[in-house]
Amino acid sequence: QMQLSAIVVGHTSSSVVGGKGWDEATIAEMREILGESVHVTTNGADTISGLEAVGAKRPFLVAPPWFGDRAIGSALQYYADHGFSLAGHLRYDPGEKWRYLAPEDLYGHGMGFAQEIEPLYQQIVEACPPSADAVLIGGTGFRCVGIIEALEAALNRPVVTANQASLWRCLRLSGLQDQVPHYGRLLSLP
Image: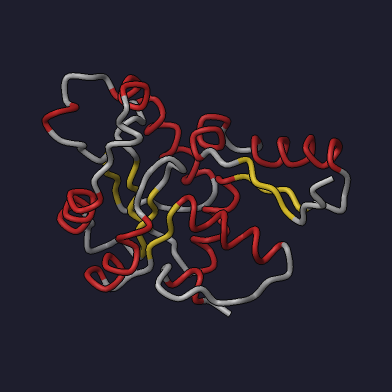
């Protein structure tokens, strides 16, 4: 009844833990349910398309603090399996207040609501290797929209985030080519 143009299965973790082939299988299953008139995508497919659109081959992966070692390992493998040679990766350190919790317990204890973007910005700027040709901030629950433009200016390279990539891809799949200022190079592409 909503007459949707596009939908996204919006979890980076689903795509990366599911591995290569998960996106395609999920999209096919959703198309069976929704029909061919609705465009279906996943966050993993969106970030891959976003990285390709900005010409990235060696992105620097930034993961949220609630991604444990297995999720990080899955993410590294996922992007490698899709043709990217990661320049490095960083799991955001949310600060002393949260360090006593295991990564998988952070979100359940409120870390998803208590995010600060200034330390995230600083950690990315300090850790991004010179060999990176883009920054990929994974995790749809990761608050980072307020630093995309500043990171691109500081690092002189495109920044692709999970939510930004899905927004961009759903707009394009729906036939909307409008550019969105101040939301990164990806949404400035024609």
